[in-house]
Length: 582
Image (cartoon, helix red, strand yellow):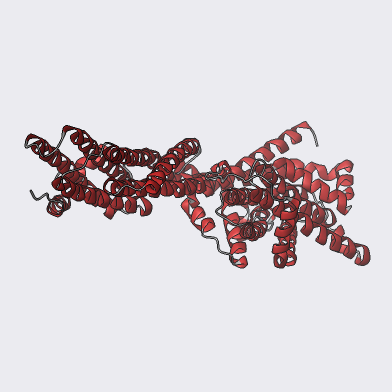
């Protein structure tokens, strides 16, 4: 083996790792919000959790990525530690699918069918389809499919390159001695753990081992402990990810480590005993690519079978190893760990945005009630909600900007933009709630009162504002286009009411029925209520724009108002519903 073979091996390894990363990231984007839906709807059922972890890992081709997601979910309070343990066990089994895909490279035979099954035969076709999707498709979803195909083709090409480059090692005595040394279970375990810890992927480590197996010098006796070691090495990613996280998230990473360390220790001991007593001939036979895939799957399944019933014990042990701190930990609403999986990060951002919307709209409705019936407790809550909305806007804005820097699918990119727009309107609604509260306090402090007619008018416009708030909240929470369509005609009615009520008040002042001081407060109230409806209109337009894949609010407003029979009908309905009788 000369320097050129070494360079080819390095190049093949780089292509292999690049293809695996490229394919995994594109698979995550294609899965999109489905990943968030699957993981966020976890139940306490252990078997369901196991299947979820297994399925998600099969999709994204990385148990490390799944475990990092789990740590992020636990850190954000979306998943309990017991649920996380079940998902982690499933992820360990799901990651073995990569080894089976790579084992296709070891297929040999002269029949046409067998030749077609070899990656060297079908990956060029996949690469051709992939590049066509990437170059000629305008849809991001199809581009991602193209990247998946190209990633897989690159991965397999890198695998072939590595296998060809290391074929000369079969005649190198030092290489032969190396794998004779790895027959020592402890040394093999350490080698597998170190290799996986460095490249941060047990699938990649097993793939490298499969490539080396093509030399015929990797025996089953050496491969088995190395494969067990890869399970321990893959824990490095989750452990690093848990640094700076809450105690529960650190415990999730520790559960992952305990599961793999204990599982490896148990089955390594069984392997050593069987080897010492029975000395099976198969341990001295060369391992094939398929053989290593079998070993990898068999070990992961066996470890799960032994430890799955004791997942609660692993959780309790993790709690003892990572004890509770004396200080109260602050809840992490949006975990940066989830940014590596943009659909999950976006789903969590949306959850927090909905909470913000509920706070803002609840506080505005409360302030409407406080204006005519002041309550110190309600006033305190309104101010607390406004402070909370300010904080949430800052957190969400920063998080969504970070998220926008990641590779997002078309749908996710649109939703991130819509959320960024909407949180500004939600924050302003909470500000108007405080403004209305302050107007109520001004009336109280100055012993000012509204006329009976003004109170009747206030009931009408405040009822209209409550309805537009409820419609916009429903539209925002559920991406409900039908509810959003009702917002704009009602907003127009509120605009008309504002002008009518302002005119009515001027007439009352001219008749001496109302003072100028009350007039200032009345004007402020009307302005705040009208602006609230404007913000509701903006939120509803974002929902409609998302459905139409068009983020041009002004165009949406023009399309809604002009030449739209439904709009005209609803405008007439709301005009009659919220009419002012003099």
